[in-house]
Length: 428
Image (tube, rainbow, N blue to C red; front, side, top):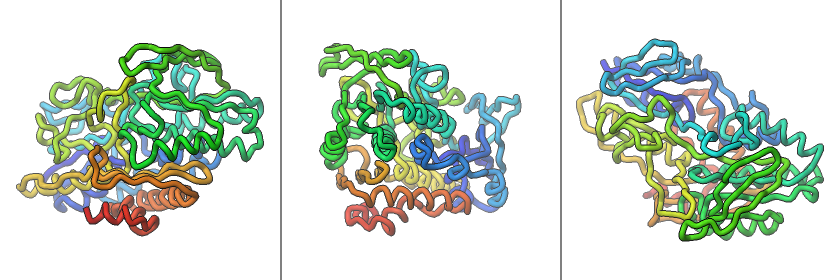
């Protein structure tokens, strides 16, 4: 009998537990360790921040669902992973031993790396967590009462640009609906070398599509920009030249700002030689398996992926939902093989399918594989993207409530969108 521990219960960890239950033997056991019994659907956080969703609409209590699936569920945060001892130490002083460990913690948000950044004692908002989104909503309501400049974007080292673009356009739509858009100058500040880079060197014509959207909505932008510090109502940024020198420093006033931070690995898995890289992300091979600790796997945002190529300001590589699903499916199959005495043989596709909602329209892209050169490199825009994102939200929350391991992104892509390029992804 094997005991598998899944560390984390977000997008990757929750479906990881479900898929493992379907792949391992009846006599094998699973324990999920997470700091919160509640699952929050992170892609809906931008809607929370402008009042288009309420917290309870995107929240699911995982404990009873895990119990029905025969999965042990511990709502206690991990203190430290001890890979040489095959155990996870918890913050309450207890420990959980494992035969196999799947790290699915997501990232730690590195707000502290820039003075004044973030909602925890800083001056900018975030949509990375539902708590942050609710705090942002309170500041958004103040903006409605007292309009002023807005700065949205992603700081140096960020690796998740889609939500920044989403929130930029969702906020713009909300301001138009409130009939105060004319009183709110908007600026997008990003570490990307160009608009639509997304940490992926662009996908299809994301550069042209996103620049066109910004021009049509009178949104200014600064690229290759490093945030130096944030003070109340003022952000100091540096525009960086291709050779790395500072070509200009600016002070940007704001009444509301949402800036995505850089990510790093969580404390429980950081600074472990052979397990994590210098930023604390977990090292894996093509089978999602750590090269040194062969009974440890990792899926999701916590996985170490090197940057695409050098950029004037550091840009990380995103891990989209489709990519994470492919990691999860490969890992579940590989652990299923191991508990039966076989070797891992499944490799995640690492393709990217993304729906970026703009409130009343949006941009979608498909990258196969996510890292170029690609077999499929496609992007499009339209009102259908907004409708597809709403459908995706409902489908995924239904999936989590039912405890099913059905591949939700493929179903969404193949049945809801019906795009020829996505059919090519399935064939690939």
